[in-house]
Image 1 (cartoon, rainbow, N blue to C red):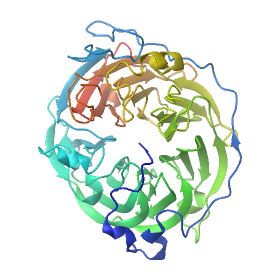
Image 2 (image 1 turned 45 degrees about the vertical axis):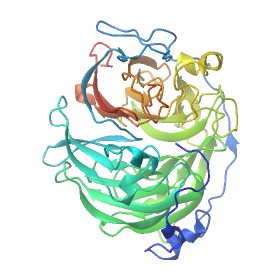
Image 3 (image 1 turned 120 degrees about the vertical axis):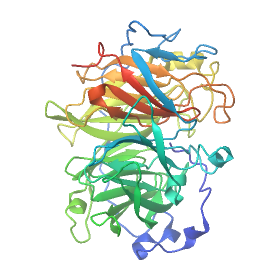
Length: 479
């Protein structure tokens, strides 16, 4: 999430030089020493028809939404709404921006999620439920057991940066807030026992923080400043001694890396486009590495690009891109322009193109205009009928996408036909009045979901009501 409200909550350390020398001089606050890649022109290309994704057909045992797809009228979700999903378990009372699943070398299965929506406002939850990164033992998904809460500097305010590398079992995060924050990075080891993470390193290793990305090999962690032109690439070959290998004067919200680490897919939050960046020299650890822009792609009816995740299907490369909030969030466009999500074909990476949209009927401009000021949470600048985070069941031969659509709850899509995605399931948590939703009980689903695909499970958090483990009906799960 990005809302440019000024550099709030900067600790006194902001004026100090970081532990890794001039490359990490926090006095620069973003633009400073480092590389500024040559820009390429932003392109727009023909897009598929602009319409809502086909609605889920709810099977037995469902409690469907009462109106158009995605709408949650007042009083309809007192006990929740669901379609083709079963609630396996629920834990806690707070949630943030990321949920991860990790299985360690001993076979322990863990869920890891952040709990702070906006630090330090979360501290006003005096029960402590919204302070730190929570670790759950998921050996029995029906009975999660909290085994740890990480409360170092970055864990208290990771914003959207919490990341877990599956190959090496590393957890990395960088401090952030609504805009950005001095880049205190924390690294934890999960691989021996994910239930009890062991801290490897913590310090002001990045210039700024807000979002992040990890290479598949677990050796490079990227911290992005979002509100500023600032990306720091850290070498984690030795996770106990992070080293800056590249400082980029590039503005990016979220970023994801290709499987080989040679490409980064960046989302530009203000000028509204995705950048494909050649990061091969960084990945190869060349001296004074230079990143190069390959392409920039913009699309119609966007809001604030959040992240862009590469995946393949039948060997062909794509990107799942998703926007957050609406076009008026930063007073840059119409409140009825909901970016939602889209699938981008990157077979020709110099000419990427949108081939499909993932969006709900209530995200369509006319319907949004009709309901955006009437339903609980729909008028809140921090909520609304919009997407926030999505994830894939797999980066290879992906078939399912799950997205947090804020007031519309968790939505699940079948993308086995990438050009014709369809909604297959959803879950709107029972209404819970809280300070975050203004006491109106509206859903506040913001997190990147996690998958246990062999069990057809999706895990996510709702800001006001905590962690949920759901199982999607076998009848709608792609074969």
